[in-house]
Image (cartoon, rainbow, N blue to C red; front, side, top):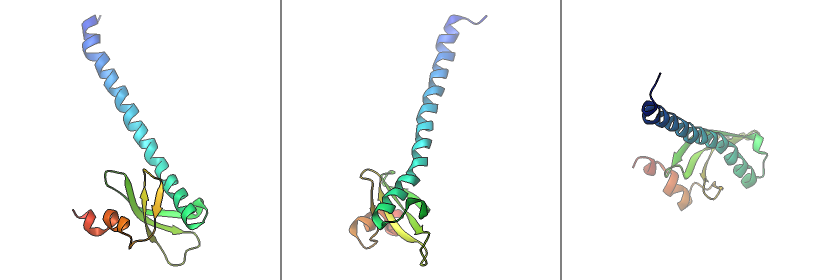
Length: 113
């Protein structure tokens, strides 16, 4: 029979740590899975297209995950992929790659720093 101090000092803290880890990392996984849908929805509003017709590619988190840079293509596009910036805090999209906002967050020089 196991002693009561063993349960309180070893098993209970281990169980609580595992439970807390599962909650934290499980929530993060669910949050990331919905991010693609949020980006597609924001792009759809910006370019007046259906969200289901937008394909995302090469997504990269920058600025500690507050900004996502990547490429998108619409189903009817004949020109291939176009660049975008998605601000997760304001749920907004920037499509102008010459804007200072895009350059400061998604340009190659920022990624290399």
